Amino acid sequence: MNILLWHVHGSWTTAFVHGRHHYLVPVTPDRGPYGLGRARTYPWPDTVTEITPNQLPHTDVDLVILQRPEELDLAQQWLRRRPGHDLPAIYVEHNTPKDGNVPNSRHPMADRDDLLIAHVTHFNELFWDTGGTRTTVVEHGIVPPRVDYSGELDRLAVVTNEPVRRWRVTGTDLMPRFAWVAPLDVYGMGVAGLAEALATRAARSAGDRRPPPDPAGDPASRTATGVTAHEDLPQARMHEELARRRAYLHLCRWTSLGLSLIEAMAIGMPVVALATTEAVDAVPPDAGVLSTRVDTLVEAARWLMDDRDAAYRMGARAREVAKERFGLDRFLADWDRLLEEETCASR
Image 1 (cartoon, one colour):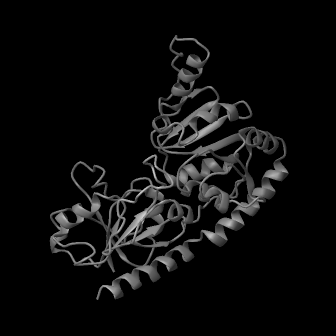
Image 2 (cartoon, one colour):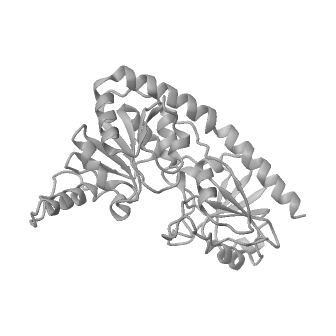
Image 3 (cartoon, one colour):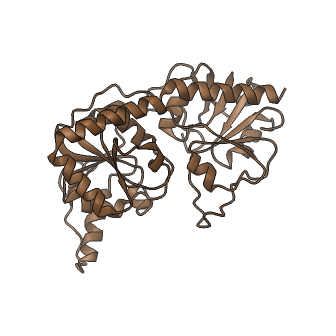
């Protein structure tokens, strides 16, 4: 099939475009949010083609993957065809509700008969009110990382995006409690100012209104309050660095299941995580420590720093779980069945 989709979530799209189809990804001159084109830090196959809005009306497209509400109108404008009417459309919901009205949050695609909503977790399907719109769940899958866990460094690893702006959502406020146990290395997009933000908050909490000193060194990798930020590393490089850290720390209070968590498990890292959203179901007790009590997680991190054998055992189990449940072959097979069902139903 020729499948049109926007580049929104790099890790998810990386897995999706490893299928057997031809993937058309819009690109605009500014490479803005609706025209990013091909990924620069993820390995995408040659079956992914950049396409401009002007080319789309003259291009055969068999199905549209939507991931943001505004893409429905954008697809109609650029294709000059109506998704859900002139060609099948699937809306992939990556996120938990954000409107503050949980558990009564209405999905923006609720009560439609022209598309299918595919949730990436059962938690998301449970918490979104989609009315009469058809729904399904296709759980995550990942391209297996090409590194093995060593855990040689007595450090904790976190992968998150925009932890300063999203603060409590990503559990940024909890990071200093773990930094007392071991240094934290934080990877992702929009992390460059994290150390300074944590130092500023700490100073304010202590009643000190003076600005914290500016840490020396590369501004993309600065250290303060026991936290080092690594801004937007290529995926393969990030995996190499994760594999050297003792454990993976997952502090998200209210986000969908992060693919970085699954990737860390696939590397063989033990997990220390908040027992929230889908993480409860994705990480079994013998692959990590999950709790809503932060003190319990801090003690678990300290234990893994002291007991490398325990860390290796838990990491080995985490790797088994990731392979069995979140393997790329299962993910692509599930999507192939869904794509075939939707295209056949629209004929």
